[in-house]
Structures are given as structure tokens and as C-alpha cells.
Image (cartoon, rainbow, N blue to C red; front, side, top):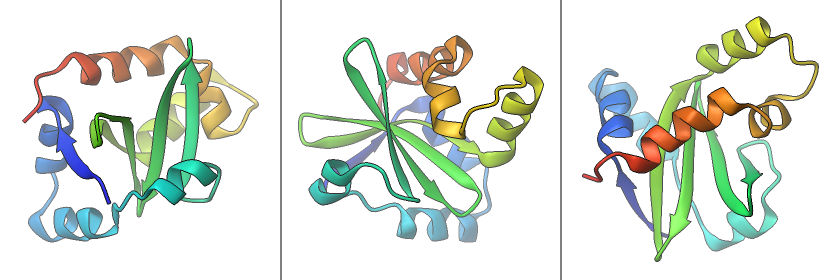
Length: 120
């Protein structure tokens, strides 16, 4: 298991949820070395840009987007799946969710905002 670190943006996104929903999501959000090595499962995906890796974890209706750095899981964004579905629909991308996101400048802008936010 890794230590999980939220930045200001991801902490605000998860704090906007009800207490019970927060607890359920955090209970489900577990990351191990094996998960990262295997990468492609229903819950996990690995996205790449310019040689940097970002991971996606699906928990209920939400997606945690994070990177692993210095033994910690740094959560950049926590987004409701409807947010991504709406984005993909508006963009009319004929790819799967993860492939479409990996190629999207708008998605990476969201992630970079999270990456640059202060960690809590």
C-alpha cells in the first residue's frame, strides 16, 4: 500500500460529496505495486504523455486520476464519470474513455491544474 496524498483541488472535489459517499470511495480506493504493474484492468488504467505516467482508478461513479511519486499516490483529480462522458460526447471521440483522454489537451490541462495545486 502507498500513502495517498490529495492536493487542494482533489481534496475539494471529494469534500463536495456526502460523508458516507466519501468513506465508501476512500474504502474502495486502494493501490498496490501489483495493480500498477498490471495496469490494464477494469478498475485501473495507465495513461502516458511525454514519458510521464498517470493512472486512473474507477470507484463507483468516480474516477481518481493520480501519479506515483516518492512512494506516494498523489491524487490530482477526482471526477464523476458523467463529467468525462459528457466531455467525450461533446468531443465526439470514437475511442474508448482512456484512449480518448490520453490524447486530449483539455484533459491534461485538468490534470496539470491538479499536479500544480498545493498538496494537503
